[in-house]
Length: 136
Image (cartoon, rainbow, N blue to C red; front, side):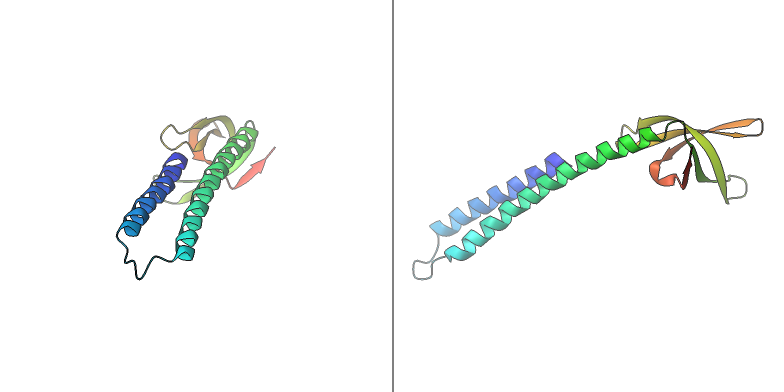
């Protein structure tokens, strides 16, 4: 995403420059292009490129924070809701976070959770957003 966004801003700026050069070559000498408007548009493209670069940087910071937060949940007891396949209703589950890993397709941090209910043990894979309560 970040490389594509920066490349797209760069491509837009290059396309604008090509259009501007063509416009300057073919302009009416009696009604020339306004220099202030040209400078304003160039400044806007520069700002767009900088904003996309900042967005990319913030995305990296957020990804690092998300991974650190997920790792901090290891060994903790969490509460989440799961759909009961027989009744179709949401059930409250409490389990322990055993592992943290990243989805290779999305890069999202996922939690491996073990739920012990009597003698039955179940394994769940959850996103961080599914966690509703964290306890030590």
